[in-house]
Image 1 (tube, rainbow, N blue to C red):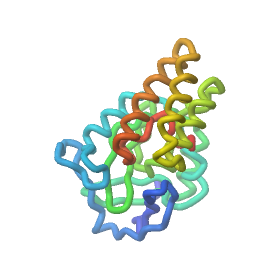
Image 2: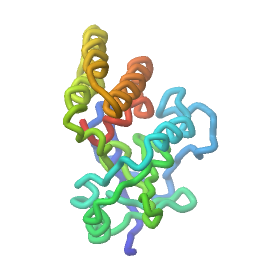
Image 3: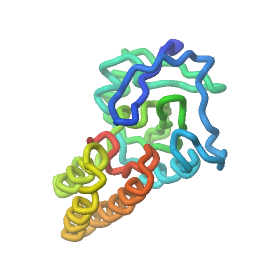
Length: 211
């Protein structure tokens, strides 16, 4: 495995757009997963609570094309320092098309990182929360109408229109059956948490990488 020390890190802005945010290796700050104190970036949602929520989803995440097209897609983290894997290596990992589980999320200055583990346990990386992985369940045709509505609510719906769109989302969820309905109802529950507290940690897991 080849990697180089990171000299900058892409962070996600509050508008959910990716922006460049230089971050020296020695200045990476993150709350420990065992820390139950309030995390400033997530406004009353601890990294431990966030990590547990993401881990509960299981092995349903795959790497996005972003990690194989630009430097800074996959990282190793030791003693609070980040090392960036080479783009060549990232492309090899991406080509394996593996399923991953997110077992940890941390808040850093101006953004968030997640730790992912492959289903076979051989591959472990840190990557960007919103651009590093996508939830494969979000590609189910039956769930796409719901995801479209949820994405609209999260990204550009005015406060006055959220309630109406939420009703639409709930109707779509109730029409589904089996595992699709279970996933949809869970996503609606998480969406309501986001509506009450609009932070990264409350974004529905179904939307990760799908909006």
